[in-house]
Amino acid sequence: MKVLIIEDEYSLADAIREILEKEHLDVKIVTNGLDGEDEALTNIYDLILLDIMLPKKNGFEILKTLKEEKIKTPIIILTAKSEMNDKLNGLENGADDYITKPFHMKELLARVKIILKRSANIEDTNILSYGDLTLDLSTGNLKCNNNEVRVNGKELKLIELLLINKEQIVAKEVLTDKIWGYDSEAEYNSVEVYVSFLRKKINLLKSSVKISTIRGIGYKLEAKND
Ligand code: CA
Image 1 (cartoon, rainbow, N blue to C red):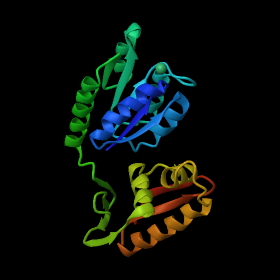
Image 2 (cartoon, rainbow, N blue to C red; image 1 turned 60 degrees about the horizontal axis):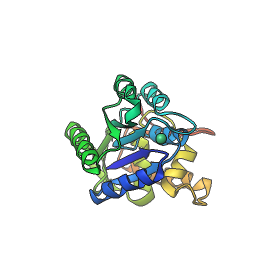
Image 3 (cartoon, rainbow, N blue to C red; image 1 turned 180 degrees about the horizontal axis):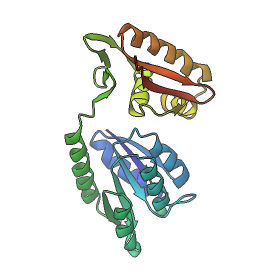
């Protein structure tokens, strides 16, 4: 499961990462509000730990955007004791929990586990589906009715991102960043190549779902109406 930490105090964020990685969680740290918001909007995280006082954009503004964009990722607010109003504000604005700084890592971990367990009970996070298409993230099996194909590596990541954002456009840049990494020099065209691989597989499955190209922007999954 993936956790996003939006916190400008890097040493704190790094200490949290260390403890979460011991629990086999996949952790990403972002140290300013603007990048944090972009990252949260990718909607690939199972939990967000959100600081309030952040450079470029504060935690409340981020909460507001996520609410507007209907991002349902659970959020725990990390707030300083002097900002007790943050608690009320945060919970009113859609956060699931808050923890006051300084806190014990054990306490944070306990809260993280409660929230992740709660969401795991709501949905089996290994399975993503849209229309007649189902993807098992643990095996890479992509299914439609009785047909099945295997996807792995970059193809798996690509179909995962498209399924998570079903019916919403995913920008090509976002796909490149998420699949090849920010620093990579992946050809912009690589996304197109992998999209065409996936289209072939989806065709083989005889699925009614298709990957639509939104020219100059990116891609989205749509279910054909016929
Ligand atoms: Ca801060």
